[in-house]
Length: 417
Image (cartoon, rainbow, N blue to C red):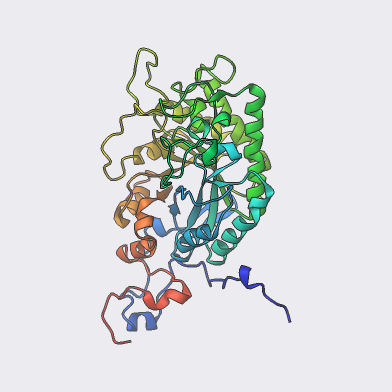
């Protein structure tokens, strides 16, 4: 008799798993779970499967990487197992683990997740196994905080200007950037990376990718957005270098291109590779920086370069490089046009839409109108982890439920059964 280690035993779901459309049975109709005998044909695009390289997603809803600030020394905890697991159980096609530091000093906060040593793999593998048992794909975002690192946890009771000194577990003497230009008056002054140190950072991304593969992740997302290190190289706001990594667009883009190349080299060819951009810095033009910062046009050109490096999808966010940023009104879907720009201008590159996508019809319309290929959902899933299953009902789709939760399926008719 084979003994099962209960710590790693997860009942595997049948079929394609929760969130995949299935044909309702006569019993489902009798019990009032649906009045339809079949699903729409064609299915709403949110519930159409999608294949990227060797990975097929059961639907096009994605949990966006969201910082949870719940790690110690970079280790995943039971919180991550439960947090990520809830979305796998409730039907999301692809679940991303938060921005994960490729170096200890690459974390944004002292409590960010990490993947800079092999010891981090074991707990992450447990999270991955749980997601896979629930038939969800799972990805991880690899990141370096650059000049915005060594920060206290958002809810720390011992915050010192928001930035963590050595006594509070921070690394103020190891904060780095493309140039010695701090983010603001309160942040730690960064040390300008040498070319040799740049190569070491790129290698740390590749090393973390190898560990991500060992943990079983399906997708990597390279974080080049929100004012963190890779974005800092892109933006003339933070990049004042005069060598091959600064100045022209080609030089400022070099760090991201070479990092993607290093990751793709070690990441299995059948596994997708994504990258996240801030499509614009949203900073007004000035005499010093006539463009204001990183621009939409440059994002499109960078996406073209990354197509050649084996990147499969750009998920398009914005801002984060400067406290002078002027973010427009946060209307529904306010960042979707960035994803559309990728689809319209970069042949062969997929795009993911983010930014106040909060309703089922809205999410589906983004896909039906070919504004993006995937929708990345954030805060709406924190409010309602059941969003995908609820969206199926609203769009007239009969989705598979977790077997253990089947009795909780919404009824369209009141019955006594």
